[in-house]
Length: 332
Image (cartoon, rainbow, N blue to C red; front, side, top):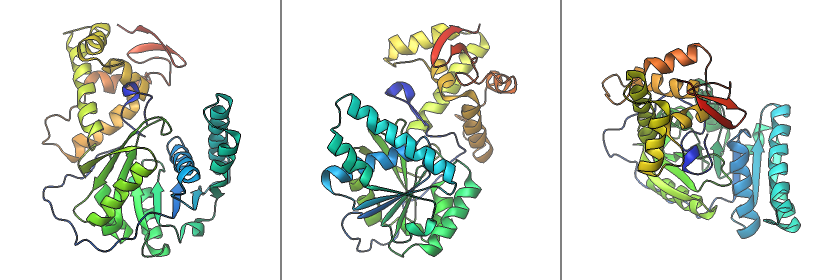
């Protein structure tokens, strides 16, 4: 769940590893109709509400969706998601980035519900619930039984195994990953992930949908962390190891990547921003599932900081001191 610009990079949530594919085997392509008329979004938290809003904005403008079904099982979470979307839209109107009429059209495209049966006749469902594989697999097992046979499933996981979820759904040929970046309304990139089982017509149709809602899609196989996190997370770990060994200070590591590599914020600053507990959760999962992958390393300093509840921005102290979203001095 990340950020505005390159600075807020990579995760949508934290998570464990994906599933390493070692061969290019895909199911035979079947005939897939054009477009997704009815879209379902499951989970209206940090990522899900942004996905629903972005899709609704595109639907109001170009008519790509007749409706968006926004689902939460808990009424309080549903209302919180509705409020997030409403406030986001109102902010755009106040800044003259959206007319009142367009805002009204956008909001009318979304149906908020706690009734999961409302998803049964959707054409595409994007799931953005908590990063817990057991919960996701149970959800997809249920959806696979209740939704019409044509419904395509797409998980917004940041790095959990798409293949595991696809198999749990009972329709792996109609399953893809669509990893959005935070904030969804601003960040352009979407990683579209395929497995060995994905029907290529389904994959191509999903790529087209990403383009239709105003995003830029990149293609990736189901590999741990996909593209962005697979490159980003090991680089954060190497920055921590540099500091842990005493090779360079926190400030010098971050300043080097800002001025030498053109990054908008340094890796230790970014790790604090993401949450050191999230970073640890991700890399520990990768180390466990892929013990032979040498780039997956857990620095001792990361474990120690999490044990001390020095999680970065969210607790006020990590590699830096924090006051809300404002970064202070490095903790040397």
